Image 1 (cartoon, rainbow, N blue to C red):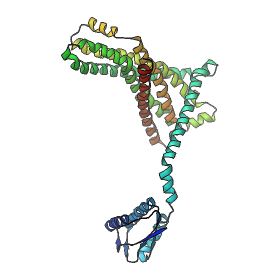
Image 2 (image 1 turned 60 degrees about the vertical axis):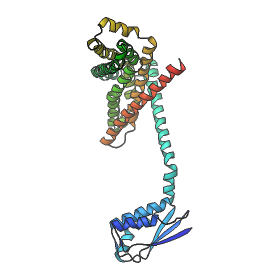
Image 3 (image 1 turned 90 degrees about the vertical axis):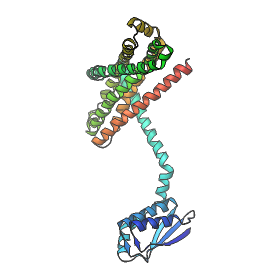
Image 4 (image 1 turned 135 degrees about the vertical axis):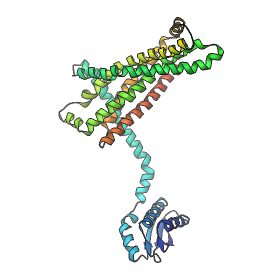
Length: 360
């Protein structure tokens, strides 16, 4: 084990501490060893100087060196005695563990979370589909309430957003094809785009920001206020009581909202085509209908069922995992929305791969 020795300055404070740290970092270090700091000439040490000593100690840990000191006296010795437990702490193994096992710990946490999510999925499928068929109780009254909350109250915002999106798509695409005299094909573009992608994605995004966040906030609040624990103490299955009605409700609601989104997206584009591009309604709508294909409509509709399941389960999953108080509720609500949006993109990529590269 190699040994290095260095003299500390007469005053170890903010600026001299920075220079002292720089001086130590310029030394040549072997694979392992110890650095001895001689405080014989040091007559002044303040808290900022102690902070620099801690930084030096952390630098040495990374180099697999241990810091020791000699020659301290008076006020310097008193202050060093106060921080000695921190400076002498054996952090070599801890530092290595953090360096070598940081990613391992992260992977373990991810695996545990995936396991929790899969268990929630299995329970949700059972209590939503299988349990009612074998006579197990289902909360139909909550199911009806969720239909109203998730569906009826979301109709206006879904229709408005898709209408505006259709209007924007028509505006931008018409400007590109106008010089070629192909403006009528904007109707085809709108039909294909909304049938395959835009209606489902836009509607699911709105629902995830609205309903997904609401579910996460509701369940995380119940968890923080220990209502979830109270339900379990009464022998009530939480998934059956809270999750299953939400899953079934959104499975019915989201496809209906997506169809409305498709209709209003086409209406938004039609408004531009009829009133700005000056096509007659009969010509424009005939072109729109002629460009509608069952495969495109089916692809967009199938996505919504997968989106619905994931939106509810991600919201519930984050709600059940909340820790802390009101801040934890806010963090899990935000996390649920972010995970929902990521899920929408991932599922859409999978559907695109299946329909355009596997089933082509």
